[in-house]
Length: 247
Image (cartoon, rainbow, N blue to C red; front, side, top):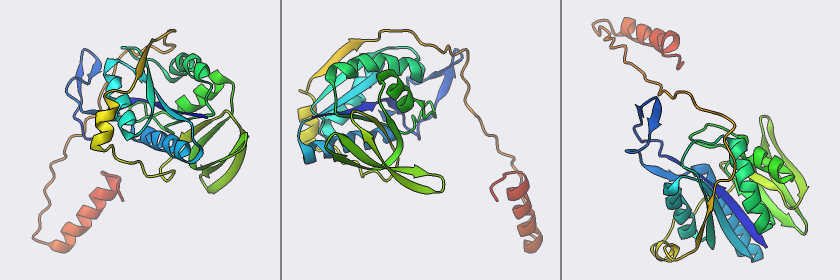
């Protein structure tokens, strides 16, 4: 059996980003394995530990993405494949580029993040399923293999449902699927020697970015007069409700 985790490298949520030449400049940002993809890596490791076989991590992005792949290898994945592309590629273009690589591996199933932190998009899993011609189950919180099929719990707005699909299939992750393990020091040392196969991006982006901006919030710098505590409290509630929109 082969279990594939598709991962991406994204800026840490605490990183301070800046714009340079109408583009987000990541040169000073801390870049990490996408948290949703950590669930994907962990799930492939658990499936391998339970059913045997191989856990493979497939990453897409610039050369620096190898850092995220090595993180997944340190968690316990057996080997990595890196589709290298230095520019921006939309989810459909990424899925089409990854489809050929994944088809060569003929995996039992593929797991990827339910939402990409930098794109704020949920498109990759569905686009990958379309490119491979296989079923997709999104927002998975439980996954069980049953012979040539898999049973998965899928989150809904009003609750959850269990579904069964024939394999191979794509599953996208959701918080609650598992608790990702931390790489250990021996795992980190072993990861340095594990294979990461480089593959050139074959294709072309379907979406062109014209300009990127960063949302900036300015302080209102309002100071409430505390001489009358009751009036100050009422004014604070009004500001939070009408201007800050948090109540």
